[in-house]
Length: 149
Image (cartoon, rainbow, N blue to C red; front, side):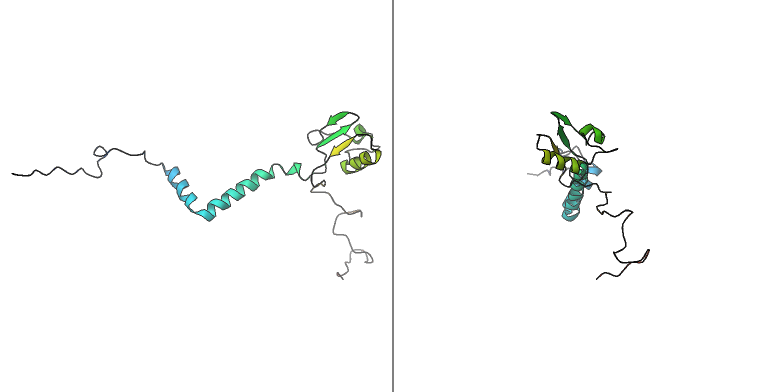
């Protein structure tokens, strides 16, 4: 009896064996490789999260009130400009919402202002002195700074 050998399929022949899944594109292979690098992948995710959170920072840090209730009406200064006269303040220009909230608390008439968590502008100087910081220390001559201590 003679045995006939069955022909072995060529490994490179796509018709010889069915494909289990379609081949991955170059982008999919690169993403899979990037995800396998844990430090880089997690750093990318953290950077992406911080980037998305940065869009909501004006709701956390701003000198404008988020919502103001004045004489039974709601105002949204974060979305629209209201002059100081709109809230009964005798000032020109933009409303100082920290002072407005303080006066509402003192008057206790039911008016309120919802301020951000940090109610200061990023460009606002909190110093009472005129001019721009750094200011000379008290006791120094014009243009001369005293050493600390």
